[in-house]
Length: 290
View 1 (cartoon, one colour):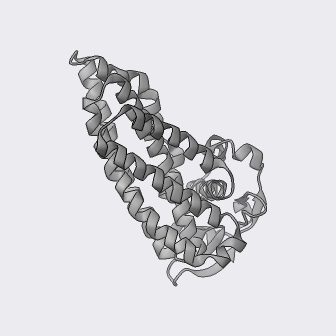
View 2: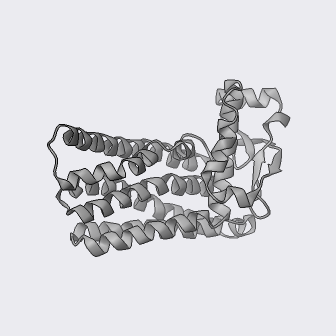
View 3: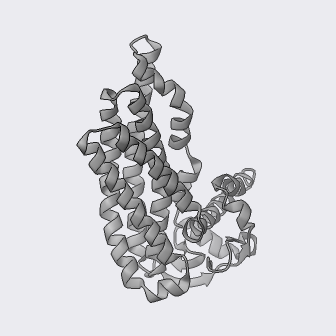
């Protein structure tokens, strides 16, 4: 895939059956539109056929992209899985080569500004700044990975960004878990801000991890990219499950009458919370290689 020129999908119907079977079996992996042998040091096997898609439609968000995968629901499991891989590759290209990520970061920054303004706990302010720093480095990584020519000139810079962003990402996991628990003591207004902040951050992390893994793959650090994705998947799911359990317990308390006005705000936010917890887009980004 060449994001310098256009955003493409993998044309699976033109890929030989033996390669498709090897991918499903795990012997081969797809990295940035290239099939590599997972049993032989990621040796290059084949460049996959690509077909341009309507980038103007795709950059509006993941909904149009997910329809590609959902549209093959009635097909055999093999093709469904492969189209999901293709969908993630498209999403990865969009994250890396368009303003898609920048727009999401801008919205998250607005949420960070609000939470810093309303919540005066120094720990919250400190870690909110860490979130800003993390996504700032993610955006810098996106810029240096957006064009193949820039990647080829700056492999050392990409590796430096990857080292920095990994440490910052792990700080954010701890912070999200902490702010969910701390929000029990917030005012109603601050609790609303905290929930919005957590939702936006949780929605952003899989996109950032996708970009991290793509960056590692672009400089042929395949084991590193796989490990970033694998560890992020574990930690993200743990944080998400903790958030889900916390929300369910609050809703249970509301239903049995053990509730105050501060808890009741969860009912107003339940659709937003469900959206991020059940996001198919984010699941695909963390489950599959970009």
